[in-house]
Length: 603
Image (cartoon, rainbow, N blue to C red):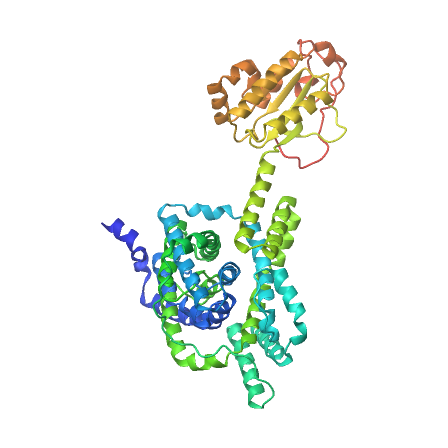
């Protein structure tokens, strides 16, 4: 019964953490989060093409439900920049933003997203979010930053232009009407940016967005008071409490919104899980991804009926909640109630909030989305990751966002498959001076055994890698036609399937016809078991499958041609130093062969 109660009401699992000290800390953290979400909610709702109050409603009941039915102690749900941008970029192609039809579509989309998230959580599919790599997220958010800037250029400069969902289109439209820019509106936006950046640098404890918006509002009020200019404002908020709302239930509308709902589900869950895990690394908590899916899904479902557009876990407010000392999810609950109280007092002042100030705040948010340090690190780390980053970034700027994120995922999977289908095949030799017969890559120009070639395969030997490995083996035989034995070191083969097993058997037969013998050593138990079940180990020859490298070298050396060994000066094995393969003593032992470059890894 207790387990069932914890599943239905997961907040019972952390009730023991609620103490007098925790309540005081949560109250303080909730107040900080409420102050932060006030300007964010209005700005993000504007970005999403929704009336500004919908962003504040998204930080009320959805935040409470997401906190109580999620797993994180610190995650705060509500409007976010990426989700807001996705809403505008996707639904904006179906209806004009800020219109009743647009709002109804967004509410319906919110319900669909919630049902998908809830279904994924109940089906225990929380690991699906791991398919989106960090490289895709970095590229997508960088592109989203530019999209936010493009979408707000008209508002910042006071130009009445139609909203565009593609960055290139937004930039082209702005440049075509740049002569219509209002300098006073741009001044309000510039003052907002300057005040926000100054506040973030010199008064970090004060929410910089709030400081910037207040400075912009004061500037706009002064311009109007002295009769200089009238800058456009948001207008009064209709209510401090979220009214009930009703999504569409038309099958035709649901079919049309289905791909958008899937894309926004991916973005929302990625935001929520990454935000929760980032704070959990500091707090020492373990996040239950499936429970977080359920909490976020219920939050979206509730929001669809309480005038909220799609919400997710907010990284900014989650980090601020943790930094402010929040200890339990009650901090997010207190934040929602504190926001209602704040709205009761500041609602009349919302009429004086300039649209340009909202655009300026979103400019700052957009710039923060472009993680230059992460981009630089990815470019330096891997060409494949750099390709994924660039393709995701370009797709975000040029095509619909729900398709752009799919492009990023597909490119990252392609890069991964390209890497796994090309396992590294390296020529190695044992270093006699190292205990344990360490195998290392052969430096250029090093002496080689004229009768034995040793190759190490690093990677999975599955159907996708078969052709690549076959080509490398053929190249090795063609380059050294005098060898009589080829030893494959299998310590790097972590997985093999039926195709890989058949490759080894076919190569053994091919080499045998050419007078060569294929050997295996250091094969892990799972690989050997598959070769046993498929009968390939008998085709290769059980006497040619060796447990260790030492055993392989010792047995193969005994089968080498003694006259050839007598004339050989390479002497790359320990066995070469004392006796010939036929047991006859060797005259004048040669100093052991040493690999040139230090730091080579072992095989």
